[in-house]
Amino acid sequence: FFADGGLLALGCNIWNLGIYPCFVAYPLIYKPLAGDSRSARRILVASLASGIVGLQMGSASVVLQTLLSGKTGLPFATFLLMMQPIHLAIGIVEGFVTAGVIRYVRAARPEILDGPASTAPLPVGVSLRNVLVVFLALAIVTGGALSWFASAHPDGLEWAIGKVTGKKEPTRQEHGVPAALKSVQEKTAFLPEYGFKPPADKSKAKEEAPSWPAVDAGTSISGLVGAVLVLGLVLGIGGLIRAFRGRRSRNRA
Image 1: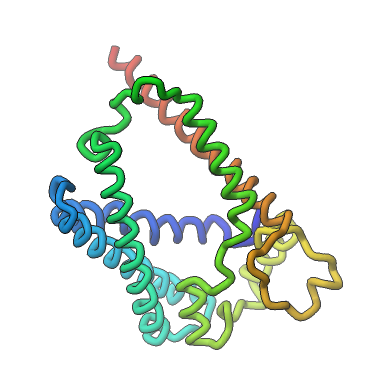
Image 2 (image 1 turned 135 degrees about the vertical axis):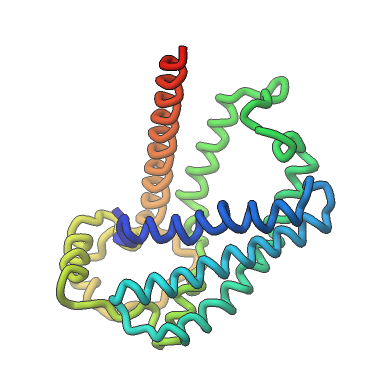
């Protein structure tokens, strides 16, 4: 839909951003260091350590995946040396943010950290329907308007690639399967780069520096479409899990 990678890119992102933090950093680093999550100092140390390790492992994995893909000419050692420092800084910032969020949750809803939150009833007077409406409204505002204020500066990966090659993106293959798939993606994506397709004459013109905030209807539509797609996936996966559990319960009975 957005011409920003396909299933392979999604799989790599899930591995880099999901597997390492959830199955390595959290159980092996955060939990032992944080303990019962009641000490502010232990929460801060655990958040920083797990955030840094998770980001460092993920960034190193990106370099390895790039090497194994064989689709770019980025030198492994140089690329790795660029990726690690920038993601170290990102990990430190995310560690402080994580610690702040955990401290807030500990003060506001400690039962979420003390046990399975799904088994705890909502506070008296709080309607699940109202909660869902609030989250829906936040998703609409975030995707439809706050997306205009996304940073125009390169992220950690783009920064590292720029330092190595002097370009925002690595050189792409112009022949073979990658080029063919890119051609299909360009023809089928109806919101490329999270916006409407530019006219043919403008697409060939020289790129201008991005404005900030990027007030654009295409960006808003992309944010809303993305929110709907995520919501649909969550509901669909949740429905499948519920159906699977129901079938297992009936079989046991």
